[in-house]
Image 1 (cartoon, protein in one colour):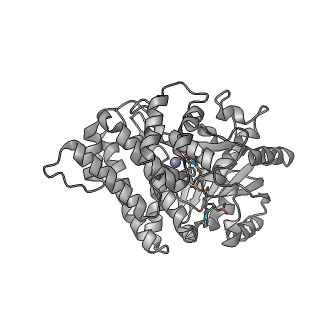
Image 2: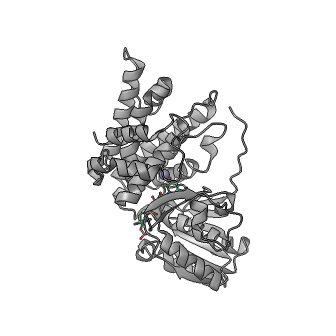
Length: 391
Ligand code: NZQ
Ligand code: ZN
């Protein structure tokens, strides 16, 4: 196990009706003028937004509504939000929604405290040194952004999807009421399941030795997600299964499952090119890319893939070779993704084999010609993974 610092200071308030505490929490964190940032309107339809407004009014907290964050959130709205925060002297941003609203809020929060172009944080030419405080009411367990220090934004000009972040943009509180996820369309629930599982795979695929405790925590969380995922797809109103997914999504990405090890994250970067090019839902893109990446990386550590197959996917070892066991694990994963309604190949998301060179050139734009910590990814390697994803 490597040395590490684990610092994840978000206050999580979890369970039924917990959104009712929003006014109290905003006061606790010193909010006097709040920007409520949200997506395309699901929180208006569900009645959540009017309830939040009533709660803020009851605490005499001033607020401005700022909606419109779209899936794969765009830079244009971030620029508008930054202007609004500066003009209105906003001192707290409350993101209500899924990863897109939260990530957009994070980019606005950092940009509003910066004199230059907020995109500098995303193309790596500047680091975030201050941000407006952020709180979250989560409506979609997937991205883990409610507990993470990252934000992922797509720049319209050139359609570049990039991530940035540090501790300044980690939410100070996150309210997670699983009941708020009952209204999710099945596709979004399933994409969320794949995304949170992928956050664990990115950490599980490591070359760091002697990380058995976190390996086991990763495996246990994956098994819990698979079990709860099956239940929720059958009954969207199963509170306990929704609760398991909500908390799994948070711990999958708040850092606890990655301590003491080198994480990978190559597959997320491969997927971000699909989101940017085809505007595909992030989790759906990952359902296509992870089986392909795992096949590509199989020879890096066959024992690790064998262990994943047995401990998570319940593959019987019998008289099979380690490679057969590992491949059966990947097949079981694909079957699960299909069962919950996710795509598992390029054609199902409208991606085209002839675009692979374009995707690879975008992927390596502004990066060195070699990344990925588990199996290093060169342009030729990336081409190979995309080609496997076409099968
Ligand atoms: O926009 P509204 O109308 O709210 O509808 C949303 C949206 O259409 C809808 N939705 C959300 N909660 C709902 C609901 N519909 C009904 N009932 C509810 N309770 O779901 C759709 C998708 O929402 P979105 O926020 O885009 O989904 P998700 O949470 O999966 O976030 C995806 C974004 O997060 C980024 C992804 O790249 C993608 O841009 N990620 C952020 C990370 C981070 N900050 O740490 C890490 C992740 O790996 C990921 O990259
Ligand atoms: Zn993700």
